Structure formats: structure tokens, C-alpha cells
Image (tube, rainbow, N blue to C red; front, top):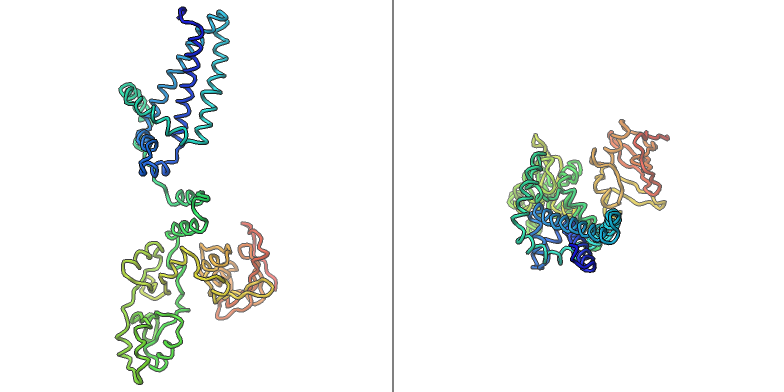
Length: 432
């Protein structure tokens, strides 16, 4: 190399440093690509995305190619720098060249291109594929040999190479992706998507109308009473039973009996002909499963039963949809009949109020991993039936018992405005 002009050696050295920067940036850019955005762009026939997606199908080959090229140009650059150092400074030039080349490669061929590629992976990775794709075909035998040896060593550690393409997201990971989508997905839509993912964690027991609040038609009543009930009913579908709610006859849609109101004398048999067979739902059924069942069975209402067949409550399609899209109302406090806003900012809450419904509509944070009703939550926390006037701190919310009846809390007052974060060791605070 003594016959090569010093200027040519410097030119070759600069060219190799640029190549080293290209390989380093290409590696970081390709690895940093968003895989889901990449697949979307590839489906739209974006040429750079198509090539990048094909290269990333075999990441071991891609890494082998990039490292082969990067190490080759770095070693060759080191050799040329050594020659330049010897010709300019003699033996001392070897150390000078090594020190200077290390700084130059570190700054211009490693840190700078990799940082740029990390910040803007698509702008770096897509153009790089124009060079990497044909280079892989050209050097494929050598890359294949390198991967064969490397993959054999990797298998000794019990690692399966094929697991590299297994990138399925769990529900928690998908929820994180949705929450971090930012402006790409409106906040309202993000909430709906996460609510859909949460359906598998919620069962019909959490949202059903409990048995003691069910409104139904008792065929043992007089026909006049039944017609009067249907006339003033706020519901379009009602369960029909005989004597006891467990003796379910079916479901009655009021629109199917409108003609009966025009007749002077109506027999129960005419009413019974309009009753549709009841649809029963096992307790503990996840909401996402029940939503599919409603769709398959063409139903909008179901009766929740326990393992003995006793009716526990009633769940509707609307209840499940509200878990996804929220309440169909603009005034939450007026929507829930169990909650009454007071002038001082507190709320009077019926003990029968569903905790999940309170949390969803009022934006409270009452615990939902135990009892389903507000009364049940209070009695579980107190471990006894509290007396009227008893005060307690429930999940950080100041609560005062207003009325108890039949061993349950009928009404309690809650003040969410002065909530303080609950402590793990927080004990019940009583004030009679």
C-alpha cells in the first residue's frame, strides 16, 4: 500500500466511515420500526415498507448481513488508518491512528446515526432497504453460513429462533397501545376500546338488576291489575311469573299486547299467547361472552340464574352496551334513581345502588372486587350492620349512614369532594 497516494487512503477511510454509519443506522432503524405501522404500510404497497417487512421476517439474516458489513468496513478502516499513521508519524502513528479512529467511528459511525435512526426510524430504514435487499441476495451464502453457526450456538441456550416472529399482543399490552395512541385515536374512542377489552373481566353479576329490584308480571294477579301495570310500565319488556319470581313463564314485550287494551274483556290466555320463552343466563358469565350470546340468540334480555336455577337478577343488552359506550344520558346524577344530589355537594345514595354503575357514571373509585351494591360494600367494610348516624371512611370517601332497614343499609350520604387517598392500614372511623 506504499504506492497508494496518501490522499486516496484518506478518501477510502472517509468512505468506509460513511459505510459504517450506514450499517449502524440501518440496524437501529429497522429494529426500531413500529411493526404494526410497518404491516399497514406494506399492505398499502409502500415499496420501502414492503422490503423492510420482508427483511424483518428473517431477523437473524438481517442482523447477520448488517454486522458482516459493519465489521468488515470497521476492520478495513482500522487497517487503512494504521497505514496512514505509519506513513505520517512512524511507529507512534499506530497509537495515534487507533485513538483518533475510535473517536471518529464512535461519534460519526455509531452514536450519531443510531440516534437519528432511533428518532426517525422510517426515514432511515426505508431508504436503506434499497441497498440491503440486493446486498443480502449477493452475500446470501456467506450470511447463511454465519447464521448457521450463530443459531446453533443460540439453540444450546434453549432459545427457539422461530419465536422471533411471535409478536401477538395480550389484552393488557393492547390496552397500553390504545392508551398511548395519543391524538391518533380520540380520547372518547380510546375509552370505548379499553372498555371492550375490560368486558372479559366483568360478569353479568356485576351489572344485572338484582332479584329484589325486578319488576315483573305475576299471572296470579287480577287481569285488571295486570293491565294497569302494563299501562304504567316504564319498561318495554317484562318477565312474567306465577306467584314467585323463580316460577318464570317467559318474557312479555308490551308492544305485543297493545291490542288487548282496546278490548273490553281480556282473558289471561290471550295475554299468555304473547309471552315469549324466557332466556336464562348462568351466573358468572363474562360480558364479552354474553354479548355474543345475545347476538346469536337474537335476544335483548336475559334472566341470570345460579347453579340451582333460582333467579338472581336480570341483564339486558343495553346494560352491556353502556359498559362500552357509557351512559345514554347527559346528567348522570339524574339518570340513577338511587342517587340524589344535595345542595351542599354531597349525595344521598340508596344502598341498592350498583357499585360499578356509581363508578362509571359519577367517576368515583369505589372497590369493585367484592360486594356488588353500595350497602354490601359498607357492611363488608364495617363487618356489622351499622346504626344510623355512623360515619366511616370508605375507600377514602367520607360516608355517613342515614337509614338502615331489614339488616341492610337503605340510604347513606357520601361526600366525594373531600376524598383523600385511602391507606392500606386505614381503619374504620366511627362517629355517632
